[in-house]
Image (cartoon, rainbow over all chains, first blue to last red; front, side, top):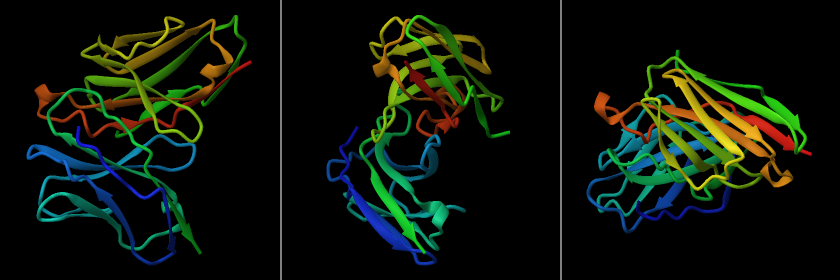
Length: 111
Length: 117
């Protein structure tokens, strides 16, 4: 799996968009970008994934640069309930079972 | 039903006790996982079952014994644990490749908070 780099922490104001960056400069052509989050004392929650096109679902948007070396997860209107650790993971879609979580970004949404 | 349930939510046990953690899903997923998460650390994979067969054991000590009695249930039997085994134990499930799904979109339960005294 390609290595990812995320900021350790970031703050966001409630109601504003939260933009979470992830660098994955060694990503290969068959690897997808996955995002999970983990709210305190809960299990991780799958958010979204993408290959090269921008993706949007009810939770978030994922913007992947044209060279695919970095991506941004966007929470369009952050709420206090979005306070969590966000994990960016790069993996081939149909591969083995081992999903490895890095340190992630601790996002704190402030009122 | 897109939920993974885990019981109990909290468990306190002595080092000589035997206890079991239980996980259940009814999404038809054929891959099920146990993860361990220490405080302020990311989850770490322990075991993977695929079609009720143990597929991966990440060199987990034998005091942890997994069991998958059927496609919906996953157990983790605990015996003679050490205080350093205190952690949040997470269960997850996912589709299998044969069904056209990916292992990467995993559904996690809320976890069992284990304290070993």
